[in-house]
Image (cartoon, rainbow, N blue to C red; front, side, top):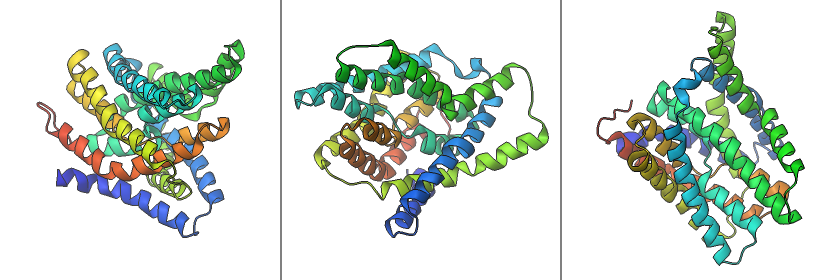
Amino acid sequence: MLAIFLKTLPFFALIGVGFLAAYRGFFTQSATAYLTKFVFYFALSAMLFRFASTLSLGDIFDWNFIGAYLFGCFAIYALATVVALIRKRPASEAAIEAQCAVIGNTGFLGVPMLVVLMGPAAAGPVLMILATDLIVFSSLIVIIITASRDGRMSLTIFRSIAIGLIKNPMIVSMVAGLSVSAAGLSLPAPVDEFMALLGAAATPCALFAIGASLAGKSTERASVALWLSFAKLILHPAAVAIGALIIFEVDPYAAAVMIAASSLPVAGNIYMLAQHYNVAPQRVSASILMSTAISILTVSLVIGWLSQMAGLSLP
């Protein structure tokens, strides 16, 4: 377990460096915003494109895999929603809390960290999880919040969701990479080297950006944030493990990657949604900060347990 912790520590140390740089004022909020844009639109997109260009849709698309992941997600999504409604929170706030309980930082933290810790073969399952999160749950939260405010559904909601997905650079880069693979093409050496060089910036820059963004977050509503952190870091991977290992019987390695990805802390883009719709942004902020801090230990524990699963050997 100590060996796994020492492997994950450098990733969280980079987050800590970003946090300290922003906390001490060396890195401004504006600088953090532009660094995040660089990662989102350029470095991470290059990494995802390069990964996807070496895979086929058949390599990553598996109904049992998707079913197991959605089973775990919707089980905890429903639980978090019920808990919020029992506390007499409106539907929009319940949806935001449920989003915190099931959507992890797969893009900025999961993609670079899990590929290093679990091997290059982890790229396929991680891309499938990322695509599922973006297509299913990013759409669901918009539908629930908009419908709860307007009191009805309209076709404009689905139009906005479709446009948002089409414009999302992570979706575009994955689709483009898979298209290159499906066409049987290989990237010319200069293009591949360019993508590798640009994609290599994703890991350090993304982790630094995560830390810098955390420096501006507060720990208000600590009790709710603690509950959502527990749901995300413990209950979510547990529910996904039940779906992957017991109900759907997913391939052990793919299941391990799925469970590890489910153990990641609350995603930062939920805060942007909460702020955009003005739905409990401080609660989300506290959940991101608290879950990221606690995940330094919990992610290591989960990956350590996964490394001891029968028939599974992690790098």
